[in-house]
Image (cartoon, rainbow, N blue to C red; front, side):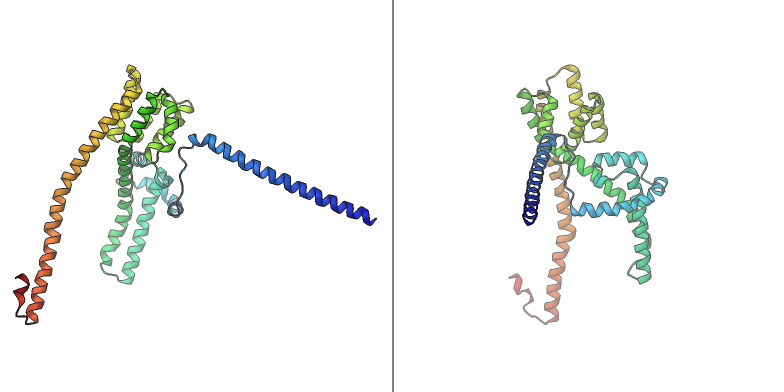
Length: 310
């Protein structure tokens, strides 16, 4: 009887070890399968972004704005729904903002500004009477200004990235690769709005959206002059039968010329700003310091006051 018990225990331990070994092989096969699927589908995952801790905190805060979305759509001072929707598209929907959430966000910040202003008035902080009015206005208008700045920055970044993208596309197309395949091969290696916009273009054509409508979507979502010029050239090139590789090459050269002219223009605008700063900030500060030194020497009965200038 004891021998049977020992045999049963040994068999149980053996089967348990075999089950652990099989489960371990299953986990290894599962991990390999996940890696294989990730490698094969990586090209299509154009919108995957790493979420930082700051974005998580901001996204959590934005959830409170949903409660004020209906009020925000009614109070649309300087923020009509059509204008806000266009700006959100141009900004790339930062922090996954929707139209309703953004409209609620401006009201949420307006109320937050009013509460902060009221607290400053109760605590009797300096300029509290003015802060009660300024803080709510800053909360409301600051949200709109922030969205406009985000949209402008994204469009500027799009224009800045286009020449390098077009050069790479031109070389790939000249090697005999089709436009769609070239986009699939090149877009994943870029970051920012170029990756987002052309990635969405590929996804739309994959699900059956006509190419003309996909091009029009690119034009509607972006107001960058260089990007608009590129898409219109592609549309015209397809209608007239112009080689796409030549279109990309010509557009890259033209955009680099435009970029050089913009840099020269910015440099020309910077010179008067530097002059104003020197005239109204640096020079008065230097005069105040010199005058203060002279006053100190006078009060100290320093007879050798002007020896420092010899």
